[in-house]
Structures are given as structure tokens and as C-alpha cells.
Image (tube, rainbow, N blue to C red; front, side, top):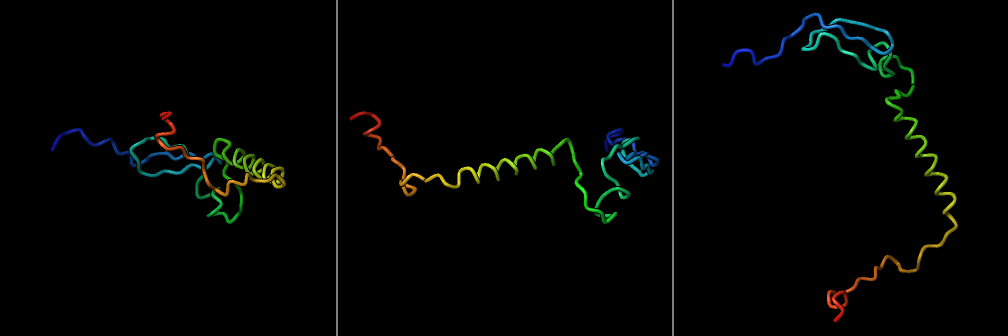
Length: 97
């Protein structure tokens, strides 16, 4: 087997959560930063809250609000009477023969 191919394993790696909680575990990194841990994650605490990562929840809620507004404003408009049929040209028509 080749020597020195495995990473260094730290038995006392420090995990730091965004809520301020810290604990020790084993890892190949000395310090690990996480956004949610067992003290602040909704699954473990029983509280319902959004974990807003990089504004993704806000952007999703904006998209949903825009979709509802768009649907209500376009509800009265009529669709074209093509009944799903497309005007497809043949190769002969495209080449101009």
C-alpha cells in the first residue's frame, strides 16, 4: 500500500454552530462550521421555523407571490383557438419548392 495517502484524522475536531453551540467530534478537519445543530434544528427542538440559507426562503416566497399575482391577472384572458395544434411546415415548404 502507498504511504501517506490518507488524510490526517483529528479525534478532537471542534464543531461550531451558527447558534453558538460547540461540541467535539472526530473528523479530517480541525474546525467545522455548521448552520444548524441538534440544539437549534427544528426537527430536534419541535419548533417550526425556516432555516434561511443565503436568502433562499425569501426568494422562494417572492416567486410564489409573483406566481399568484400573475395567475390572477391572466385569469380572464382567452387562449388561442389552435387547440394545441402547431403550424408545422414540411421540408419542401421550408426550402421554398
